[in-house]
Length: 330
Figure 1 (cartoon, helix red, strand yellow):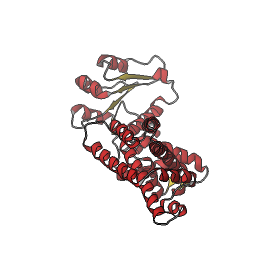
Figure 2 (tube, one colour):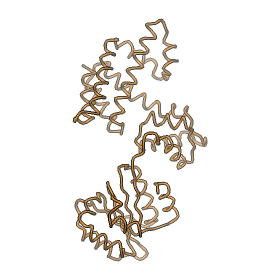
Figure 3 (cartoon, rainbow, N blue to C red):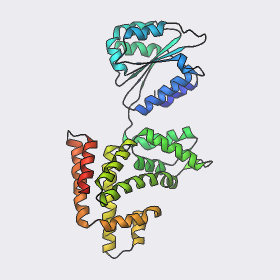
Figure 4 (cartoon, helix red, strand yellow):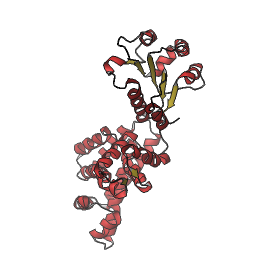
């Protein structure tokens, strides 16, 4: 069962006494939990019907007492949510196995776990009466298909090239992809199909603006500003590894522009070949003038070195990025 099949079950009003959502894709876990809450709580006040615990901090006795205690308000079924459920399950395995065999009739237990061993007895018992849903990260090649499927939630279709372009521009963070699909659906209004031009108009500008600001700060040798922009990119969910590829992408474009101009080409040829957006053309050529070929050669070498270190070094990638930006500026 995948997340969409699960949401279909929830939309049909199907209920279970126990739910387990596990895996490394937080966006899918959030989607599953949202669907479960909408189904189980319906129009009930969450302050009355929803009880939340942290599995690292709460004792099993408190959780199971809460599940067995009949709700005070008539017609209300409780949803008992245990986040960080791995530790909770490990500490209370025997009690949980016993509970699952005779679950409470007016309460639902939801466990959020990082890992879930389907071979265990408790997992087998839960699958008989409840549901366990794996929420794992998608492989890179699956992302465009996911974008096409997910766009239908906003009552839009997105072409295959546009879906691929969106992934190329935004990366593999599903939460960020979802936000861009939401923005695109609003931007398009009654238009039902998202194409590459729409992605360029709304998403490409966002990516170009951010990387432009970073490379511009580097070109000005403004360490403080460059580090500030880098921090903003990380805070807003830009993938650390992808920042390296974005910087490399921009350096290569600047390098190619310099080659075209040195070979007798004009700015219009550069704009055409590199598909520079009109909004950024003036600033792009200002950057081209600021960088010498020697600068670009050194920067490319630094980017390559950081890329290798990101895959082999014990240093955190954000720290490697800060060191990279500092060295690019100096």
